[in-house]
Length: 373
Image (cartoon, rainbow, N blue to C red; front, side, top):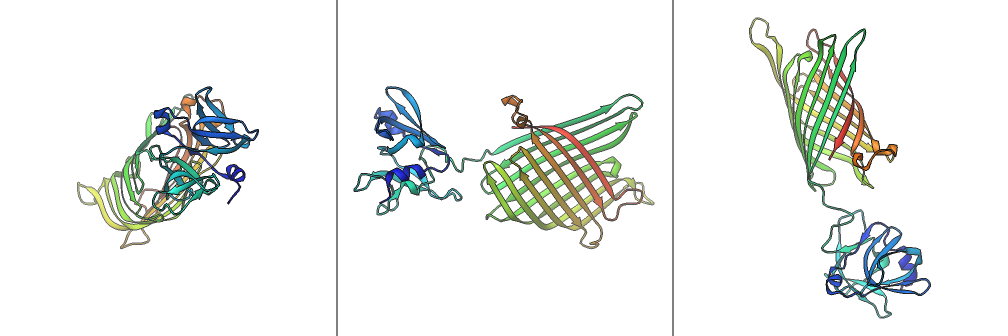
């Protein structure tokens, strides 16, 4: 049998939550903490987090006691609890609290009462009627909006505007993203850039690494001769890695599928009064890299390439890289502004065989403030 004192120093390696609702409702204050000086505190243990244990007492309210000052904790709660022995998986065990022949606290799995877990075996422990502390429910919808504007008056007059909005719905196995962006610029009163993009991206993940996806993106760009350019794609994806550590995400994803590209140009078809159109089937290749640094900086790079099936040397490569910095990292920002970040990025659209009179590459730079909620 393991030494109870040593076990108590090793248990609960991360956030642990324990709510004993039945004890509170009945007024029973049956849990007991014994300190290293052999003082006994009776009450209801309401939480174990990091290096402190909180206990609700009848004589002094809520007390917080450092772990190194505790010799033992005795739980007398009769309700079942959930425990997890490995925080890298969602597997959890429903247990009841009991004691062994020597009087030590043990956890008995409801599904197999012939087994017993010591507190030292447990990484996380929480009541069955509260939120899972390791894998809390994912907020279904999240939103972000960005706006950037620059201007110059004097010898010349220039103004540019960049805006972006997205709405993301996330479940355990799927993600739906709706987005729209705008970039406009004027120089000396003459419009020099006008681009509107809107799209959706749906991904379903039947396993940890494999997924299938559907996407569609429409673009209007007068200066690229796109009255309407629409690319719809579908296929399969693979995650080389996809991890979350302390809320920081790191992922690398590859996609392979088929796409349909349709373009309606501003220019006329030679010998006709109607606008020129293109409709082609293409491969759909994609690569996404995202990394959150501990300093509050996040790096996001996305590449998509759609070479035509009949002319593989003709295609469109779209690249966008964005760096975002949370303003709260300055240390002087109000708590109300913790979801505001500064974004700097660039988007390149490269045509391997551009139309006559147009360039291979169309590049957009932006500097924006972004708010998420």
